Amino acid sequence: MSMDYSELFSLSLPELGRIANRITLEKCGDLVTFVADATINYTNVCTSKCRFCAFYAKRKEEEFTLNHEEILKRVEKVVKLGATQIMLQGGLNPELKLKWFEELFSKIKSSFPQIHLHSLSPPEIHFLSELEGLGYRETLSRLKKAGLDSLPGGGAEILVDRVRKNLSPRKCSSEDWLKVMKTAHDLGIPTTATMVFGHVETDEDILEHLLKIKELQNETRGFTAFIPWTFHPGKTELEFIEKASATRYLRVLAISRIVLDNFRNIQASWLSQGFEVAKLALFFGANDFGGTMFEESVIRATGKDFKPATFEEIVNAVKSVGRRVARRDTYYRILEVF
Image (cartoon, rainbow, N blue to C red):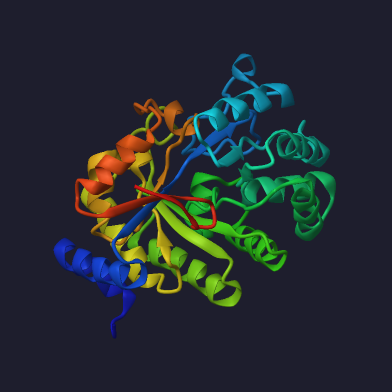
């Protein structure tokens, strides 16, 4: 399509949907996928104290850090529910050194060898690297050897430093986030990419974020998927900001599909949008329904109602809009067609 990408923001929502849906069907057909997963948030102790976060401990008495045994119990619980992917993410806690994560990953892999560890994030890797005085390559290599399979795209927010200095001044820069991802890709560690919007960003910032992700994907082909979702202001320093509308979400989702022509998979976010909007997302560029989220604490901390999704709920939701549906693994390989 011969157009300046910035012009996409002025197109009507139906037109954007039409373009994005055509691209999705050409790339992926009408099959919508999902993964059985859980996010275990292992600590709320965090030196970053981002303005958009409701999860980190504001007072000493609110702090928690799960020990290895507690984490293993939670992994066992969600494995029994059918989880194939575990995401371990938490605050930037200076008490947790690289060895803590190496031992944890080894224990999980030893007890649950079938589990895919899709864990940590670029800010956590950056923080660990600085804490240990190591480069990204050595930090990631050691974690990979211990059992890390892939890296989620958390902590990207918006990859524009003017925005990051406003939202999360103590977190890694845009350049650092991209360097961690490039290093992971170079080491054969696949990753996802994300974007959180609906706070202090402009349309131009969103486009800059997408183009930075696209450029790295052109270089490495290491991203398996892109997941945009909206900021939830509840119980954060930014709770005065009005939550982004469903139409804004669908607009940005469709633009992401159009701009990121080197990504096959774009995830809908039922967790941030609810099932009804997530079903609409399947006509605005998404070919994946995300995960079951058998466990999650960060979105819950904003006060948003949350309960895990069952296989049946996701399957029924996707089929209700006339799309086929299948359960996948983290690499988007089909495990079960419904």
